[in-house]
Every structure is written in structure tokens, then in C-alpha cells.
Length: 304
Image (tube, rainbow, N blue to C red):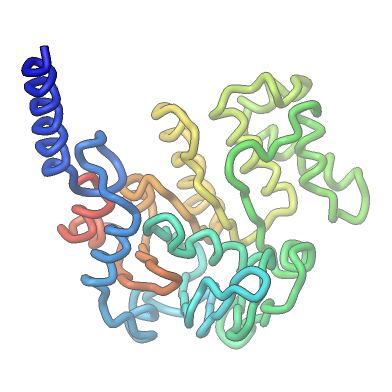
């Protein structure tokens, strides 16, 4: 019996070793394509490029509408972002990808005013009319600079109706009637929500909740949308729907979109520009299509 047990343990050990050798890649795919966050961070650092301001400007192809200069930011006294610069043109989209802990959401938080900025500048606007919004509060960034933040999943008010959730999106309007008028425009735009206007948000499907989260941010008619993980927790059919909505907001409504997306393939397919972040710095920057075609990025973030 001891011999049989030893043979069983030997086979299990061999299978484990074989599985370990098959582990590679990061992002989509099965477990056989996954490596640790630490290893991804190490490999991204190894392939990092010299991302100059000229390179960032060239990706915009003209004047930048959202401009970040040499940003150092974090939480409390802890610095997460180290000398990050960013450029996005009006009506363009930028997707931030990278391993967990790279600082992707911290960039969105800094733009919207959710964390501490130790140095650097954030400006919004065209040409000589750029507004320094670095020290503005989130409410001021929404009302004065047209920046809206679309949180990750589960940010709706479940006990409120769809209609009431939209009214909450207009909390900075001068009068409640203005929020209600804006909500009616949203219902005209998205009949799927209009059909559920009196339903409590907790009964909506995952895709409908995400549509409601996006729509609530639109009540204030922002120019810039900060979108944090739009595909998180969604079935594939709803992921496609959400990205179609975001595509319409950019290309039909002229919104500028800065997105964090763990589904790197979907995010880069959508975005005009992509940045790869690692350890709080921009390691690689390029057109979305170019990053999709980059074999090094593909091995780490696109499942091989």
C-alpha cells in the first residue's frame, strides 16, 4: 500500500510540474496562460520603452484636451504615481492597462480628485484655454470642468427606481427640474432604460445596471468620462453592449474617454490610444491597434 501511495504522489507531483511549465501569459485565457502579478510587473519593466512627451503628443495627433504633466499622486503619504504624464485629444479615447497595483485607477482618482496630488498638474481644455483643475474638488471638476467619473460595478442605488437614480446624477444642478429634464433626454436616448424607469435598480440585469451607471454620469452632460473597469462582472453579451454604448458616446456625442480596463484586448480594441502602466509609471504608450499587435504586450496581457 505504501508503494501505491508513493506512485500516486509521484504522478501528482509530475502533473503539477507539467502544469507549472505551461503557465504563461496574463489576462484572458485559462489558468494555463496565467502568471503572477509580480512576474508580469518584472516582465513589463524589462520591455519598458522611453516614453517621451513628444511620443505622447504624437499619439494625440494635435492639441491635447486632457493634459497631465509630471504627476506624483497617491493616498495619505504614500506615493503611487511617479512622474506620470498623459495626453488625450478631444473626442479621443485612452485605455490604461497593466498588472494589479500598477496605478491605473489611481490615475482616474487623481484626475477626479479622489486622492492626494503631491506635485504635477492636470489641465482640461483646448489650445490656450486649458484650465488647471489640479486642486479642484470632485464636485468642482464635474460642474466646472465637465469631468465625470463612472465607478466600477455596484454603484447604483438599489432601492431607488431607475428614474430616481438618474435624478441623483443631477445633484449639482441649480434646480431639481433641470435634473428631471436631463433624465428625460437620457430616456429618449436609451429606450431600454425608459422601459424600466419605475423599476427599482436592484432588479436590473448586469448590463442594464452598467447602462444606468453610465447614464447617471451623463445627466450633467460632461465632456470627459473617466470609466473604471466597464466590463467587470459582466457576461460577454453585456460587455459588447457596454462598449457599443461607449463607442456611441465618443464618436456620436463627442465625449473624451479615459478608461481602465482589465480585459486588455477589449479595451485596446476600443481605444484610440493605450498606455501600459507598471509600478506607477507609464512603461509603454502607443495606438490601441499597435499595442494589440505588439507580441510582448500580447504575451503578457492578451493571453499569449
